[in-house]
Length: 565
View 1 (cartoon, helix red, strand yellow):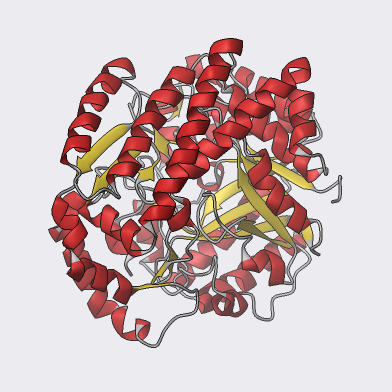
View 2 (cartoon, helix red, strand yellow):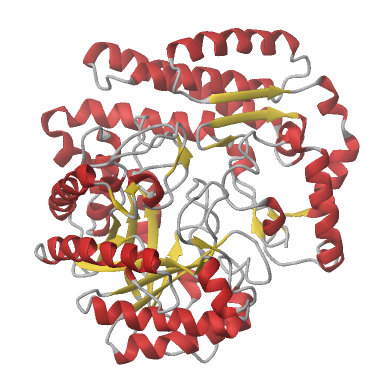
């Protein structure tokens, strides 16, 4: 692959200098928490800039040539803003100008991120809720940005997900583009700005299922409609490597293979569903599968790596800074090296030197543990869809929450063979025990006790899901969780609410088989199962059975009601 390709990496780590919440939303810079009286707190400004400078040095050494920097609304000003907000945006423009110059001095390209679109009470009052007015205002924001920051290379647009429920601040985002036609019209409105000012528009296809545009990430028909008759040299389409979030067991996203546009591929090295860097998890073998396929494809312009961004957790790993994670740094280095054509073994050799042999065995075992204990291979091998959403191959673990209940158990058992699942667990347990032995002999991971204790419980939790009589094992797990919480107070949270009735819940199985399909293409029945009327019914069922969902549901991420539209 082209060694001069675009290699973008996020740059949020330096801004998490202060964050009082126990559980952190890692999706973007926490502006709300670093401000005081409309400005970044004085004692934080120098520290953030010093951290930012050191961070840039590390990512350059790792092989990256561009950064993404949050975010557009803080860097532009509209005449209808009140004086206080004008002063705040002026402060951020001045401060970010210094950060951008730091990046440019290292020959790094700078891309500013933005949701489509951001809003507040003043923008709402000005646009009066009119869609065209919001598009025009966003277009104007791009012009203002490029005038104020002429050396910025472009903007990265997220159109399919808005701020989580827990986000606070002067600007919150909401979904503006709800249909492929609206997406097409939006691009036609903003691309001339990028072309005239010689900037790059990186358009992300990430969507979470909301509205008619919600299947853009995997549906070729939606994709074609959105990009119909759009041919701009300034447009790059950004796609996650799979047709869901950063999970394992996903085939390469079909759009990457089929779509004609220039593309970059998104990878995550701070694995939000695999411990946020707390665990000895190496992505080398997993990502090599994708990289090998990318070598044969045309119009691949580069990669975009997330080493800090994504998910909710109370794990505080600031990649490449004080409190960093060795495993995040290994994965971030590996992503850039894999792009160059290096093998995982060569990468481990370069990273660990003389100790590479034992680390290779240790991390290969960790790969097996994650693939067979965290994931259920028999379930994860399925391609399952609910309306516009590709159902994740991992259902019982989200971020640092583990939830097992009647609904989750029935879902897994409906679409997998318990015999295959239990056989995989035995393989995972054997690998976990060997990792423990290697760590005892060679002291490979100072935090291995946390990994081992977490996966020992996960092993039992997975086993619980396939046993006929679960009472004795459930009691054993609950005792182990009590010890775990005392030993690892910042560790995973567990919610076990499973009854023997789950195995006999024929109605729930029939319902799942009715609404969940095993192929991407919509069935005729889906047009009757999913419409404005039934979305209200599904939301009512969610409210009725809310206790069956993870505790964070309705408190983090986008509202459930929006996701069902």
